[in-house]
Structures are given as C-alpha cells and as structure tokens.
Length: 61
Image (tube, rainbow, N blue to C red):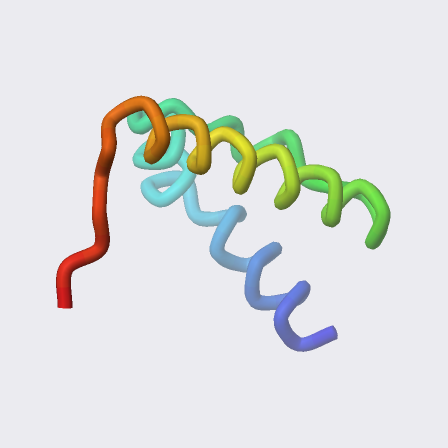
C-alpha cells in the first residue's frame, strides 16, 4: 500500500508528469487492479523482447 501511495504522490507532481509525457508515457493511464497491472507489464515485456530481437541488442557485463 505504501508503494501505491508513493506512486500517486509522484504522479501528482506536475513537473514529473510533464517529463513522462515528453518521453511518450501517459501518466493518466494507470492500471486499475492486479490483473490489469499484470497485463500492462506483460505487454511492456513483449514490446521490449521484440525490440531486442529486431536490433540484436545484447547485455554486456
């Protein structure tokens, strides 16, 4: 619950919200519930997997 309160507080900061918008994120579109949050994260992972596969990016140690 503390994490959710912290996220709500950060998203309430106008400067932070503007930065999110500038990089293409929509801070007003928050997941509503655990199932929606899982779906959101799964779609994000799938997108990043596609980017990695298409570009051939590799992790360097």
